[in-house]
Structures are given as C-alpha cells and as structure tokens.
Image (cartoon, rainbow, N blue to C red; front, side, top):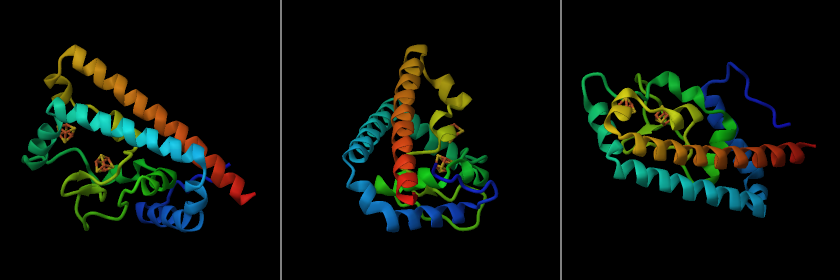
Amino acid sequence: MWPLDSMTASCEERRARAQAVLRERGAALRAREEVRRGLARVRRLGRGLEARMRGLGLDRLCVRCGLGPRGGCCAREMENEGDSLLLVANLLLGADVGAQRGEDSECSFLGARGCALRQKPIFCLNYLCAGMTGALSEADLAALRSETARCLEAYLTLEGMLAGQLAASRA
Ligand code: SF4
Ligand code: SF4
C-alpha cells in the first residue's frame, strides 16, 4: 500500500514528497493507459463543474466574499486537507502546487485567480457555504451536488490507481 503521509507532515513536506514522486515515478505513471484515461476523466469533469459554477454565478460570489471585510473561506489551516497523493494527481494534471502566497492567514494554494489546484481536497470540493446554498434553487443545488459527486468519484478512482501503481513500483 502507498504509505500515508505522517499526521504531522506540513504542507511544505507534502509538496516536497509529491514533487519527488513526480520526478521519480511521473514518467512511469503517465505511461499507463488507465492513468491517462483517469486523468482525462478528472480533467473533463472538473472543467464541467467549473463551468456550471461559473454559470450559476458562484465564482463571482466568492470573489465578492473574498474581497469583503471577513475575506473568503480559504484559510491557512485548510491547506493540510490534501495529502501528498492529491498533490501528485495535481502535478500530473498540470497544476502548480507551489505556495502561491507568503506567510499570511490564507491557504497557500490560493492564488490571484482562485485555487491553484486542479483537483481540490475533498472538503473544499464538497463545501457549499450558506451564501452559496441560499443563492441557488433546489434544482440547481441538486444538479451541482450530483456533478460534484461525479468529480469526486472520478478522483477517487484515479487516486486508487495512483496508489496501486506507486505501491507496486516500491515492491
Ligand atoms: S464558498 Fe462561501 S464563504 Fe467561501 S469564499 Fe465562496 S462565498 Fe465566501
Ligand atoms: S479551495 Fe484551494 S485555496 Fe481554497 S482552501 Fe481549498 S485548497 Fe486552499
């Protein structure tokens, strides 16, 4: 089994671990047809979800909220929601997993154009604040939840493949 991160691993340590995995195993992972298909599915569904959120005006809602007096919800403590395997997946998806900001109170993955990750941690992917749920009809909310669940299922399938390949290459 792919060894889990230490519970005390910092975000910097998870980034470094993911970058080392990509250097050492990235080419072998990309060479696997099922990994390429899994990445393509995660990418396609992720773009669909982003387009739906834009269509519902949720991106503008978050920008307004982030610029407001209380700021958005991407707080510093959220950056440890994702493990190094999520960051490996993000690197394979072409995301910049480096720190987007210095020492402030917000998540280091939060860049000038929003979250720099192409696959967000599960908590962030599922999170709908009261402002969002209040702005949506029941039908839009149900469609959004269903699309989010498809994205999550695609990512968990990919994650299982990556973990299996990485564990096999250690054997
Ligand atoms: S999800 Fe909600 S709380 Fe978070 S930035 Fe968007 S509007 Fe604000
Ligand atoms: S959505 Fe991205 S930037 Fe916001 S807390 Fe989650 S990982 Fe950080």
